[in-house]
Image (cartoon, rainbow, N blue to C red; front, side, top):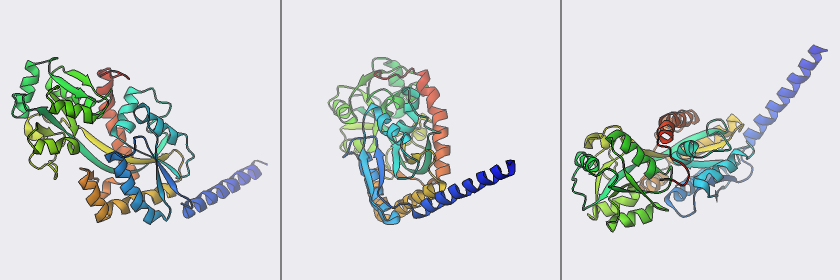
Amino acid sequence: MPRLLSGAALAAALVLAGTTASLAQDFPTRPVTVVVPFSAGGPTDALIRTLGERMHQSLGQPVLVENVTGAAGTIGVGRVAKAPGDGYTLSFGHWSTHVINGAVYPLPFDLLTDFEPIALLTSYPMVLVSKNDVPAKNLKEFVAWTKANQQKAAVGSIGAGSAAHVAGVYFENLAGVKLNYIPYRGAAPALQDLLAGNIDFMFDHVSNALPHVKEGKIRAYAVTSEKRLPSAPDIPTVDEAGLPNLYVSIWYGLWAPKGTPKAVVAKLNAAVKDALADPAVRAKLEALGQVIAPPEKQTPEALAAHQKAEIEKWWPIVKAANIKIGTN
């Protein structure tokens, strides 16, 4: 009898494996939906729509974008965590939604175990900018100025756990200073106040701040990366400017729900790689200020390793700063 049961179990397993393999081979037979936890119309939305249009060619099915906003992206990410693991509902997000939020919000899902990584996509650093009235002319002088003006220097923050906020906290740790955070509902109003001279400085997206830097309306000290940006070759890195290791990279990735067959993940990954290799797609993404991940970093394994390493780096920093919902 035990042998008969073992044989039945083996037969069932073989049938299940065959069914899974067949489903993966046929995938996709209908449109694939990518849940974007941000509002439509922004640069992040443009990034995934550009990729999705090109992925359509590889998959043979449309890639639809569904914008699900709320709670700093946790609602949209949570929607995918509860979705079937069949490859038809995917999670698109970045450093904040798939790393930082785990240290700020009590999430009803696990960022590492409830998703199957598909591919690391693109990234971009931030840039430290100040109003022109700040007397510092370079990053070393700026650090000295902030030390002399601790808790007085006003830095624009875009909500608890935002990239601008976490970059400020990291700056505090490395420079040995305490800052006065001024909260804003978005990067645009913060930048407008910086241009008006109402705040002293902020960490901003390069694509937002660069036009004003080039026009001489604000001053840029450094980009938060190891390499200079092709779009801003005159702005030094933090290493070059005198505050080594102030690396803050906003990177993007694509995930499927837990349990999605490896063959389905492989098909989705291949479609992503095809898209990122397309010269037209690359030109559009680079125009958005994005740095495309090299091919060897576009694998599911690379995304999994990178996300885990980022969680290990940033969670202690965020938790030590006691960043909570509704604080800055």
